Length: 167
Image (cartoon, rainbow, N blue to C red; front, side, top):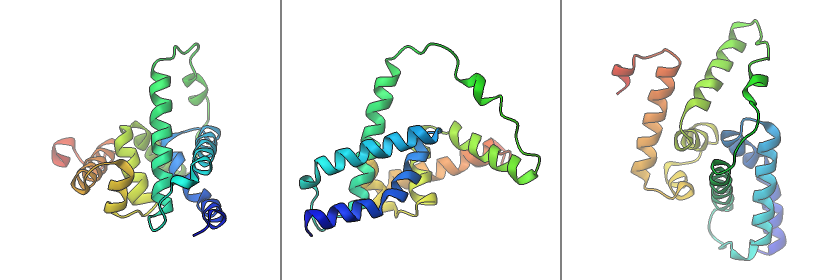
């Protein structure tokens, strides 16, 4: 595969990258920034991509590593002001499904990053356990275990299952 073909394939994967970025970032603009950073790194290092391997997994790994690097930097920064004030000012829709979607979103956001990542990869993006393990840099058993724990925590957060039953 030529470098131009790989670049074209990267462009085709932008929607999947956006979906994966939304699992890390609540704000669409932050997700777009993460996608852009991933694309820049991928294009700058396209010569390091090994033909015959999955381009999507390679890009997801770059994105995950970029997000982790950002998170480490953010943990060392001192924030000024309270951004959560604006999050609570929105008025939710009156339809029951709108409310439920909001509840699911809040429950999903309350999960630890490693659980959000697994839910996004397997449930939302349809990646296989093996592919998710490569992207996350862990064993397939760890992926299955994280997915099971993430589903149990979501059920508990949504009030569907008592925590003692989910354990």
